[in-house]
Image 1 (cartoon, rainbow over the protein chains, first blue to last red):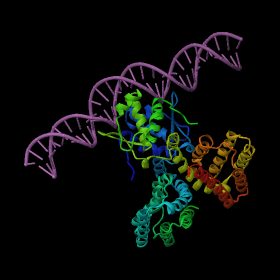
Image 2 (image 1 turned 180 degrees about the vertical axis):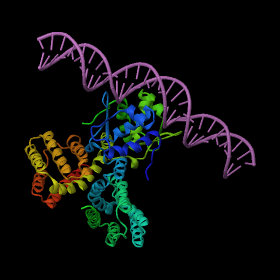
Image 3 (image 1 turned 90 degrees about the vertical axis):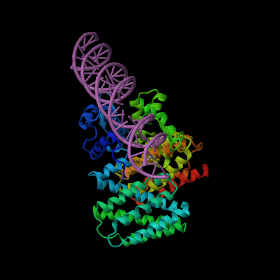
Image 4 (image 1 turned 60 degrees about the horizontal axis):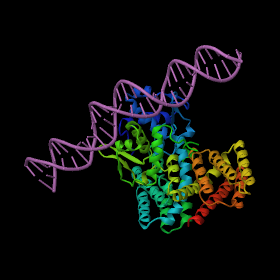
Length: 233
Length: 233
DNA sequence: GTGACATATAAGTCTGACTTTTTGTTCCAG
DNA sequence: CTGGAACAAAAAGTCAGACTTATATGTCAC
């Protein structure tokens, strides 16, 4: 999915990033570049590059005579896809998944409404195709195939909205949906009602019915929220 | 507001970041680290750190034997506050402002609804205080004072929602509101209807009326959208 | 034309020396 | 005892140079 460790500094980040986001170093902890370089058996230059990246994510702050200070969680760039991935991999996963699902519940309905206005004919076709793919794989434990079409569906909606901020959340939604299928319990086939809703959203977009598309998508995301409440009340 | 250039690599980023986000180097352009280092009169190590940061923002990609390739806009981490600031400073400002306002229109109503449920007594008090501050400065060209309370108001709403993803959009909203006041036309006093809406939202949150808080906030953000339509149809 | 091989290129890495800023301590004056 | 100025140490920051590695591209035989 992602691009793991292209280069030594990336290898370091793959270890240090998850550690920090997992809370291994409480806010205010001070690390030293030289020490880290020794620990990871890399040169100082490589370690410095890694620290710079962490700094750009606002996970740490580097100050002279002090060292590399871990910043409090409220400072982190929680929209950075890399940070999202690290956090989803850690113990805070459930909380993170909830935050993201709430975000989805805010964004996706509006995006669907816009998609109904701005979607191209091609995007409408893609949408219908995805919805049909979901229907086709909604029974018989074809979870992976279902997930594939589900992710594609939501990506198209977000992209077709014409808003780049929405479009860039496609990856986030993909992570959330994948998380639900893979990690959390979803042994049974997907909820038939949800499948129907997706089909109806595709229809609404095709029919340029923005209000209906928005309302139906809201039902989908509220279903996702309820699902979380059931799993972790 | 931000932290301009703490260190040489930061100084480089202050020039290179805006240049790239402004489209000075079309997607696919190839830069060479050594050449850049010469141009900015810094050592290669410093330039490498800068490139690593740009890479973490997905503005560029560094590959052996090729160089530093500028990535297409659709790859950029548009939620990175730094990237947002760079883009708001460039010629794409209007489009960027519109994207962010649409995002606001999706997020803030939902956040307000959640705030009505989860806001602490202290947050309710802050909210009322902000709303009163807006009222007090809504006449007589006290734009700066009005802006201050407006920003604070929306920050409290987003924070009080209890969702970290929403809370982290406080800075974005601040940029948008500041942009409207400073850059775009806003010579006249703020719309009295908008001021009233803010007061009512504060009341709704205090009264724990989630639905009302959401609806009223939606009116606010839709007003902001209409304002953009009037300015740039 | 196709595939294997050679080559040049630019990023990647490491090392060591030096600079700069900041913090905490010391020490003297009041 | 207090307060401030001078000082020393610590850690990041910067730089220069040598070396390594991957890889795009061109070349040649087949």
